[in-house]
Amino acid sequence: MGSSPYILSMKRSIIIFILLACFLGACQQGNGPKEVPFAMVKFESDGCFGSDRCLLEIKTKGGESFAFLTCEAGKTRQVKVNGVQLQAFERLITELREVKEEGFCTTQSRYEVTYRTETFRKVDKGCSSEGFSRLRKAWFED
Image (cartoon, rainbow, N blue to C red):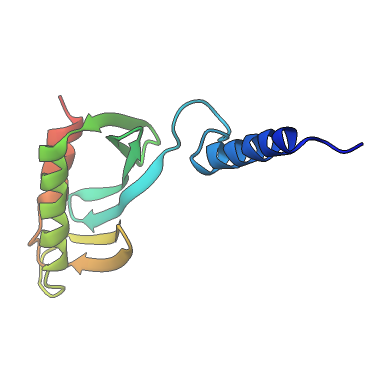
C-alpha cells in the first residue's frame, strides 16, 4: 500500500519549508543575524613624530551598522553607527580616492580600502588627508 496523495503533498510542503527557511538564514550557526562586512580601512602612518597602525571595519548585523577599530595595542573598540556617520565615512572614501601620492611631508600615511566591491590603495606623502584621524576621533574618542 502506498501513501496517499495528501501525505505526499504534506511531506513535499515540509521539505520545501525547511529548505526555504535554511535559504533565508534560519539555519545559521550561532545566535542572531550574521555580521556582513560593509567596509574595511587598513591605516598605517610613519613619520618623525611616531607611527600608528589601525584597522577600521564596518559591518552590518540585523539591519544595524557597527564600526570596529583595532589599533597597535590590540584592543578593539566598537560603536554603533547611524546614517549620518556612514555618510561621513563615504566622504572619507571620496577624499582618499583623491589623495595625490606625491609630496614632501615627513609623515607618510598608507591606506588600503575595501568598500563594497572595490579595493584600492593610496600612499599620502603630502599630508593631504586628515579624514581618517578625524573620523577615528569623532567615532571612538570620548
